[in-house]
Image 1 (cartoon, rainbow, N blue to C red):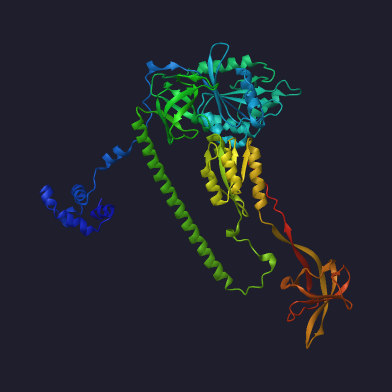
Image 2: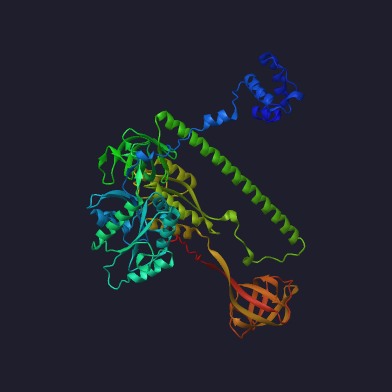
Length: 626
């Protein structure tokens, strides 16, 4: 560090710092000069302290500052071997959409979750404990199968001990099946295959096994190590074999955790419930979460007010591998956030302040990077503009016709949207899809606001400011909000199935795409000769021509081509057949064509092209990956 850097930090001139040092001998009995301090770091540290007293700021060594500012929560040290106890396995059920994952879990726990899903698909992570007939407990994570929920499935795979890959015997290996295999490998967890729907006629289990082997999942029947159990969730066939395979695999893994240690876990889902408020589903991975515990997760913290199981039953505590809904959050965490226990509310507030400051720093750094990129982009565009001007200056530009008009970037129509969802994972999935729609070159999608929970007046204010459409997914719209939106002409579109919401956005985008004009050739004529006719006191040129293709229309646009080069573009002043003024000349008919520019002269052998500009609808296909 130099004296100049000290002055920069103080926002003072360097001479002011040296003036402050004149009083140094009164403070420390030492006289400092420019020559003695310029290379002496120890003296510069003293200067910082003296300058701090003179300019009224507190100076501390860097290591003290880092120690003071590092207020983040940290995981507890690893548990001692004697404190570890066996825990239930966490099993994540994954696979392609409509391959029967939720139906399989319903069969295992004797419920009917699938009947409550909108559109017959799972759109959230379901987490629940199942007590098997053997007395063993297993925690199941049910993940969505649609491509929109990639992030959800990834979180499920990284929070689990074992992945059950459900593959429909009548459908085989599909896109999300392969994605689930990749996620299980990335998470480095064992894989077990459940070949479902074997009750359907004509199914071929061996074909499914061969398809899995082609993608690296070699089952025991094919000489590999992965267990594959044929089941029928609908008919409840061979479920006992699947359960037995799960238990055996879990026993081999010897899963253990410390139930008495500090709580750690992961947020599987978060939402704002209109009745109970902010709520997050937490999978406990270590320790025992109790009422009154203080936990932090991401940018939220909670003093646990209540805990409830997947069935909605209140519980006093949740140990390792138990999923519970937690109430009492001051700020809602995001799905995937790591949960840690802290000793007090004061400590939780310190952690939140530290994390908030860190996020602000990261945002500022990211903003600076964006500014730099924009500056470089603008500089590059300016250089290209200059180069283009220099290039254009070397050539004489011809008159531009309608076909050469371009749509400027600033003229792009924009669809602004506000997204509200029932849970954090749903909002995340919707945003992941919509972000891919901002790549169209003729219309733009702008996500101006998003959030979790029912619609609020703030959503309306933002929508009105940006002329945005509000998309509400699985959330309520209070009557007062609906009335206010109607009075202010704000569109609120509610959906319960994600792909219907996506289709709605696609329609809105397509409706905003400006109509594109393209050139359509109507006919062509060959110039046989040029002659002149009297028009007032002057003689004007007329092209004697024969229509060789299509038809010539009086009110169309015309182009004269000579030796392969366009030499004229414009309209007609007159079209005659013999001595009669006509509106159309058919093929093989001869005619006289007078162009609207009386100074332009055609030549025998010129080609006259008759064309018009037609509106062409956009044929963009928006593919969200379903």
